[in-house]
Image 1 (cartoon, helix red, strand yellow):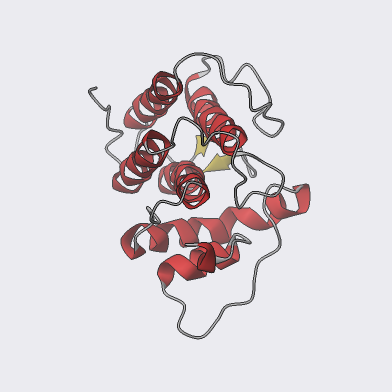
Image 2 (cartoon, one colour; image 1 turned 120 degrees about the vertical axis):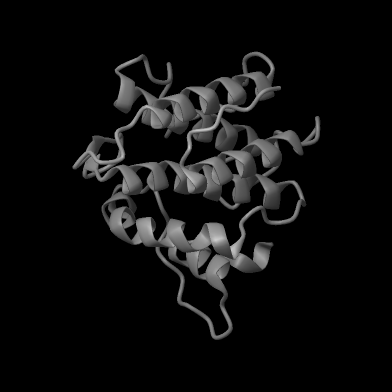
Length: 196
């Protein structure tokens, strides 16, 4: 399978993390619970796919997901890896075409217009954190590295608070002594890094 690259290093790394985490889901693992309250592995997967399509759609005007990513059913149609690969390819192609010198680009998350770096990194934040959710739910190692977590935390601090009020993120957890960059990101997003 030929993975399409966006040319944005953080986004490409997050896409690869999501691709790996999804590829590691065992056949009987789709119903497992995840760090996302009340969502199964299949629902987090659907949400992550839908969000990548949403970012692509905001940039290109092409159709977005045919369902509400915030109300995933957990019922998967087709081969999951083909579905994911299509979404990641569409997202990567859309970001590859973005003018890096543009003042702002459209995004599906508030404030709905961001700098190209922030927009691509917000897209990466979604892919990266849900890669972590899927990996932890299925007993796999965390796909997040400090190098990936640092820029994701920077953009999270730009966009998460309004989304938290809407219910998209749980309340932040208190930082703990000894937290590394990955733990700091996870706690800010309302996730307990001790799941890892």
